Length: 338
Image (cartoon, rainbow, N blue to C red):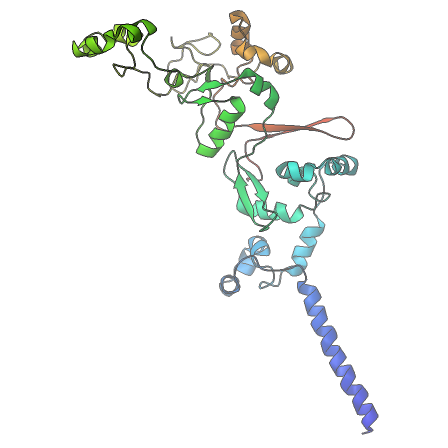
């Protein structure tokens, strides 16, 4: 064979090999296993690549030869909101400040399609939302720091919750509910009794009688009187304890005073919710009004926005506006959980 022809054939064979390798590389470009190779190989060996293809598509797409399916899934990523609204929100920085919300509304515009698939796998517990760490690119569950009507609740001041703990405002209580996985509500606006300064009365401080009365045994024999005059000396300061929620009165009536509650489940009581939602928002400052009648009106007609209602899920919302001026509000109890 002519050496020149041999040389050409040899180069063609080499080039075919290079193109084949490049083709394989392109096939796997952007398609990598989330789990370790040995784990993916194990799942493949027991048939999970076929039996649980949807799950393995997220965890081991390369080992299971599902890269083509992954690309199809990526191409289906779309925005729920229109391009005008999504682009406007992106320009306002919402892709970063409200990532959990934008994963749902504008995942394509915000380039959060990958985050959405990661969050689908993670499945956060109630009250928490899924966010993807920008550094590690790992999804994790966090308590949302945003709170609907945050400024209004801040003006209302501290709240005493039904768990006997004082919080700086209602939003702080909601965040604590998520962090500690409890479901406390507002008992009343103000400082809990156990958090109030506990001191002997000024008169007894000056006279020094508290020590004398303590030695006489009055701290044990006349506790009611000593609570008034010598609470600190007699160690009769209020203890932190759970308080009755305000949506059920101490005499056993329902929150709206309509019926007696015959069981702890309160099945005979009406649902605790705002009767006039829009009006309640406008008068939210009256949740802690100095006028008792206004405060009573809010407690009966707007118990939810004032934080008195018990619920199975803490709902925390955020409020942003679209390009058209339309309010976009999302209320969370669970995000991406099915």
